[in-house]
Amino acid sequence: MRKLLTNITACCAAIALTTGTAGAQTKDPQLKGKLVRGSEVVGAKVFNQNGDHLGEINDIIFDENKGGVTHAILAIGGWLGMGEKLTAVPWKFIKQSEKDTPGYVVEVDKAKLTAAPHFDNDSWPDLNNTWYEKNGSYYGLTGKTGKKLVRYSKVNGVELYDQKGEEIGNIKDVLVHPNSGKVAYGVLSLDKWPSVGDKMTTVPWTLIRQSEKATTGFVVNVDKSKLESAPHFETNAWPDYSDPEWNTTTYGYYGVNPYWTSPYTY
Image (cartoon, rainbow, N blue to C red):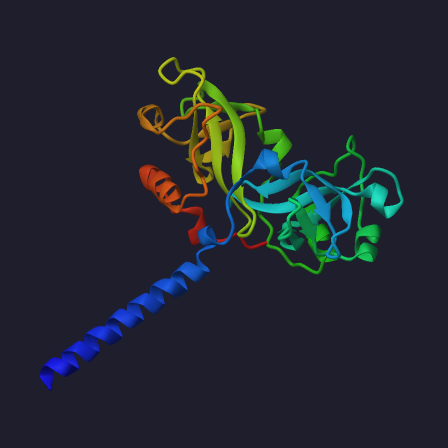
C-alpha cells in the first residue's frame, strides 16, 4: 500500500510539473511568433481586417527606456482618399498577418483612421510625452508617461560608442518581437575594432542607450573584452534568431533578463 501511495504521489507531482511547465510556455512570448528585423517591418504591407491592402509601414517608434514598440507609422493616405499621408497607430492595434501574404493587419476601422491626426513625411510631430498621451487618448488608451521615444529610422545606421565615449561601429538593425511588442536586440557592427572586422553581433537592447554626450549615436554598456568574445557573424550568415536556445544562450552570455520575461505594456 505504501509503495502504491508513493507511486501515485510521484505521478501527481510529475503531472503538476508538466502542467506548470506547459502553462509557463503558453505565457512565454518567445514561443508566440518569431523575432523579425526592424528593416523587415518598415516597408511591410498593411491590411485592414477584411484583408484589403491599405498601404505600408513607413517607420516604427519605440520606447528606449523599456525597449518596447509603441507605434507603427502608417503610410495609408491614398486608401483614405487624401493623398499620401502618415499617421501613428499604437502597436497594440497592429498584428502580424496570419494569411499567406506577409504583412501586418491594423485593427482600426476606416472611420477612425480617416479622422486620426495625419502628417507629411517632412513635418513629423515632436515625439514627446504630450504627443504620446494625445495619440493614446484618441485610440482609447491611457499609457504611462516618462517614455523616451525614438524612430527606427533614426537608430538604424547611427554611430555606436563604448562606455568611454570612443566610436566603435554602428547599429545595423534591431530585432523586434511583434507579438510582445519588445525590441529584443540591437544588431551591431564593430568595424572600428580590427579584432572584429566587418562582422556583426547581437546585444540585448537593454544594454544600449542613446549617448548623452554626442548629439547622435548610441552607447553599448558592455566592456570591450565581452563584446570581442561574443559570437559574431557575417552579413550573409545571420544566426537563427527564431531558435529559443540561441536566445537563451545570448541573454545568458550578457547576464540580463530576456525580453520574454517582461512583455511591453503600452
